[in-house]
Image 1 (cartoon, rainbow, N blue to C red):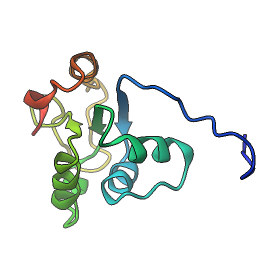
Image 2: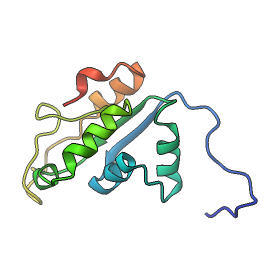
Image 3: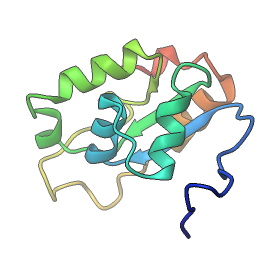
Image 4: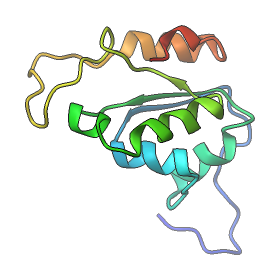
Length: 124
């Protein structure tokens, strides 16, 4: 579905929180850099300073070792994004070697969203 420039925007008027989970390496980097090249990223980037945002980056060990990753995480933290990360929540593995039974940390994600601005203890 597309929207022409003169048509009304379909962005939500009022949000309690935004959950971006699971977020790809690419989407996480785009949000950190303020790149909004689709409607979902536009809503997130426009709301960073006004709505609690919880983000779970679904990455592997190679992603975490990318030279830009630390600055992306720092930018998101500086914007107040509640990051769901760390070895206790999401152990990192080499590319394509994640155990098939590794579960996404939905409990931590949902708890951070329910707390709104209280997800700091989930930051890595």
